[in-house]
Length: 201
Ligand code: MN3
Image 1 (cartoon, rainbow, N blue to C red):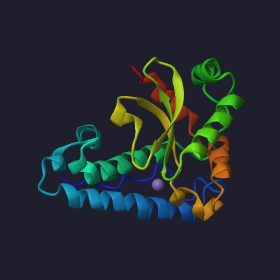
Image 2: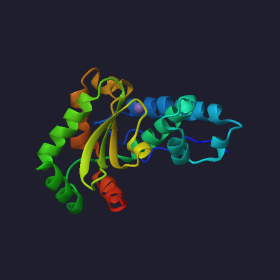
Image 3: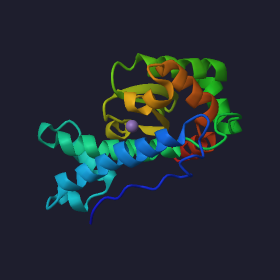
């Protein structure tokens, strides 16, 4: 049983003009697909071939001899989650239950958005920025390096944004802050995040 590249939740041009079709095609069809291809090579004939991505991630995190398997499995999970974290006509109004939690934990929606951009900019080098439910049950913004993800540390994510350079260079060149602001204002799928919040333990 081989891992497969998950299809995009909407057409490659559906996020334009905020994320170009050319970017989506390369990011999904080349970068994301490559992690799937590599993981299938790495797990061939091994117990991991019959495990879910989540099982592989949890079982391989922090193990030096499993680093390649962790990195590729985690990057598949991260990208699957990233595509689900965006939608056409994204951004905009936030479902009430989630908005109330954001206001309670960040002060205001504007403060939350500013902190999201700040957190993504603060990730030095490749990584991801996440809205998570932390161990005390509060919403928190977190950054992770390279392939690392909240799931590997027992945390529940509501959405993510890719801050690897390949995620923004084609549309935004070196302007990571502009890419992050564009994501939170025009791309983020608040309904998906609100649904994830209802699934938090
Ligand atoms: Mn990426």
